[in-house]
Amino acid sequence: MSGTRLNKYIASSGLCSRRKADELIEAGKVMVNGKKITELGFLVQEKDKVFVDKKLIHPVKLEYYRFYKPAGYITTSDDEKGRKTIYDLLPESMQHLKPVGRLDKDSTGLLIMTNDGDLINDLTHPSVKVPKVYIVSINGKIHPHELEQLAKGVEIEKGKIAYADISVLEFDQERTMMQVTLYQGLNRQIRKMFEYVGYEVKSLKRIQHATISILGLKRGDVKPIKPKQIKELKNFLNRISKNA
Image (tube, rainbow, N blue to C red):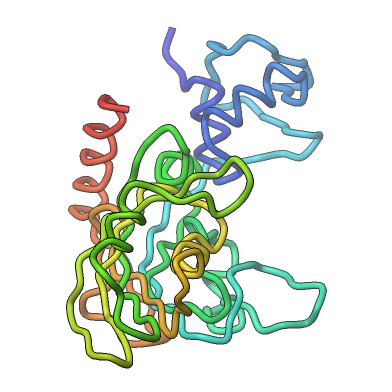
């Protein structure tokens, strides 16, 4: 019998990933043509009407963009404190898209914006070590033994060990500029790691997330990601998830 698996259909609406869709199905929150469905392998036919939490959903066109976040904006769609958000900069046609991960208010650089719930899950799931590359500047000249310490891992919060691959690009007595590659997604991880060894991060810019680069973007710019690049990204994620 032909059709689309229910979890894939829900994910194609942009509501969530297939994994989250499975949870919604098992929790009895999904109905097809007025009937509650809890079977994960259920196949949706072309004329079926699917409801999640009593709301009718439809498959949507998947969209992928690169956005160069400037400093001074938080990565959220709404802020109860009234601070500026990235959505103040994005066009009306992109207000429904979600960022893959976050950059804090003072950080700049690459954000992937999409409505592909599966891709968001694959890029942020803690079981898959997806590389994220940053250019980081700190106050003072860092010492080799401190770099070794950060590579091995430091406890930035109780029970949370953070590590990173770090290479020094430039330095003098006043500052050190480095390329930092993370494979984790801990809150304010880079700032806390350098604070642990006694330095303050002066600037932090994400230049790459998995295979997607900031190359060709200026601050505030938004550009579509080409289908070929999305295919390369998904192939890369498939490869590293097999080794997870």
